[in-house]
Image: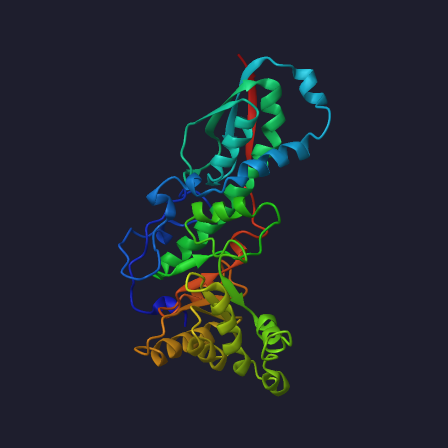
Length: 356
């Protein structure tokens, strides 16, 4: 039976999507609550403007994208000239608006201004006048496609994310939904931003943010003949990943120090116990069945209670809107999935120009 039938837990506040959207149903929305857990259970956007999180290099990325779209002569721009005008940004499909800072920056670099008529995180439906762009027509059209592509993709990710968050909250699960590092090269900052707008956790941003040890890392560490002690040849010879895990965790802790969390991908209780004993901060149960997750997570939390080992349980592997709720159990702290940012649909927008 799904974990949704476990005792009730209060759910966090969400941005309500439009009731007419086929992707949402009103019963999925839950009231705001104050969490007593160590995990954040409210949207980051409730605490400030998400654009303040963005790294300085996002402006350079946008400059590169504009150059990619017009590396030489702008023939269309020559045709329209420098007449001042404005363009209305119209939302043409249902979803959640996300990507405002990127849209603004595209036109800022082109000497245009943007006036927003709705705020980021707002659910939209056809036809919504979202913003007005003013400036030389040539510059508006020069930035049009880049700006729309970013906005459509970012909004699509936020919409997909919010849908899954709403589903999980409707099952009274107060844990954290997270994305993954399976992002598009060069577009990660936009995709991670969309996840935040949608109400989920972006997970680690890069290899420097947290150490995640998969089986390849564990075996390679044991077989690292360049180490002063020559590695752990016995673990390799025995084919025992349980024996090899502690060495990998200790190596990661030694390199990253106290400020860098270490997560270990585990495929059995024995592997998880070895990782926890070695000091792992997060245990990822990878590709377990829903029943296996419930049993393993409960045993881990029970076994290690009161033993001075603080850890979180993360579940990953093939999670989506159809099955994620089956893994949403009281002993599971994090559900991570690339389905909220890989291969998602878009929210359709267009710019309609009018001369002044």
